[in-house]
Image (cartoon, rainbow, N blue to C red):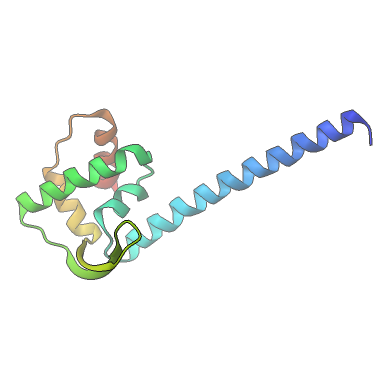
Length: 126
């Protein structure tokens, strides 16, 4: 095998690897969006389903939680067991919100940051 053919094979291999990674990311976003449409999910999951960058997801979800508290909207309570620093699993109450509840929350949400405005628009359109 010549050096040129090895290089060509490496380029094809790297391109295939990148394509697989991109397809995985697309499938994950589509799966999250489908799950959000079909039942109640956490506010974080609703934000992730908009395709928002992961570095702003937590902040946007927390802002939506604050708006939910102000509007008196409580999602369906669920108990999960959460591990903290690899130690004992504690029972924690979490809340799951339907798409309709998220639409009510977003109606009151007036973000200032551009990233959050994009998330609000995507949630309002969903």
